[in-house]
Amino acid sequence: MLDLHRLTKSFGKGDSAVTALHEVSFSIAEGEFFTLLGPSGCGKTTLLRLIAGFEPPSGGALVLDGRDIAHVPPNQRPVNTVFQNYALFPHMTVAENVGFALGAQGRPRAEIAATVERMLALVKLSHLAGRKSAALSGGQQQRVALARALAARPRILLLDEPLSALDMKLRKEMQVELKRLQQETGLTFIFVTHDQEEALTMSDRIAVMAGGRIQQIASPRDLYDQPANRFVAGFIGETNFLPAHCTAGRLTLPQAAAPLPVPHADGPVTVMIRPEHVALGQARPDALVLTAQVDRLVYFGTDTHVHLHLSDGSPLVARVQNALRGGQPCAAGQTIPVSLPGEALRLLPCDE
Ligand code: ATP
Image 1 (tube, rainbow, N blue to C red):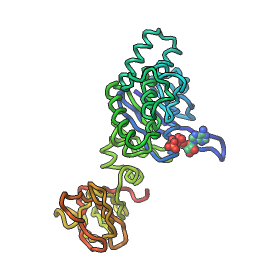
Image 2 (cartoon, rainbow, N blue to C red):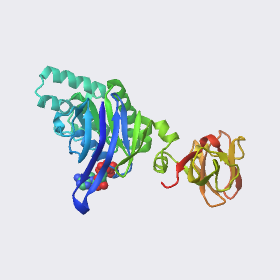
Image 3 (tube, helix red, strand yellow):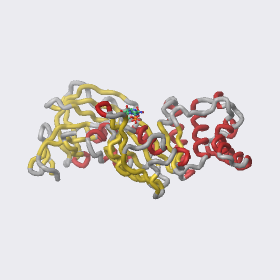
Image 4 (tube, protein in one colour):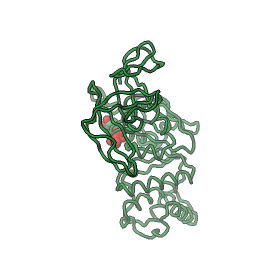
């Protein structure tokens, strides 16, 4: 439905030029919940603004439904944006806000009224139709902004950090609500966030960005399980990195306890393992068993994070589920064996 082909955006000229996007290419299918995820300044908002038409690209193509729209003005694109600050008209009622764009398009009154009613029912705000939008809570304003954006029946809804102004509890509720809305309407969503948990829980696919470049595009599960590089591995969830070496198809870690066969060229590599896959004690026979010293334990309710270090000083964190009637899994200062199951190890290029 939407194809980005080597889309590039630079601001300024000469020495002071900033390239915010470097040849970004990907395709989005109709009905997808697609998320742009990355740290501050990575180019997420710029990419969204290019899709919305608020900025022209410096190069590349932007094709929607087979038509290059890179230079089509924003109001002629079948795309609508929900902004972080909602941008509602405070003196208008909820219903007037939702129907505003339709009124400006000169649609018949009865049609506007019917659409407004449908949209407010969708976002569960029918009971507040007559209230001035300045007199709404943050979460309610967010719903009005959504209803207003949906009322224009865009082909794609762009959402720029729409939940970041909400407190944690409301934010979690709105995440569920947004996902429901997207599924009920079958609309294509392009969602911008820097919150990895939010991206993981809501998206069909996520594009991880850094420095104006796409690092990886994959489903939440694949990003977490098979990160393409160290940046993605570290940005999505907690993780351990260990220095390792491939020699003649074998992997050696700091203590070289039990080299595992690996299909990788000889040379240094980084081994990644998620904390929940590090087991305390000697586990299954296929696991790599290392000796580690316990530095400290951090209790998290459902689990305990055990911070350890290996003999070469490499830090390692194990996440251990708390048993109903268990004490602590180990104590600070102890030296214990830890098991790294072969299937949980991921090899990443060393230079990243
Ligand atoms: P955040 O999460 O903080 O909003 P972001 O990932 O959305 O960040 P962008 O706002 O897209 O990042 O910015 C990407 C880069 O482009 C940054 O280095 C930023 O300073 C630069 N940039 C964005 N807009 C302009 C502009 N109008 N003029 C000059 N530089 C800009």
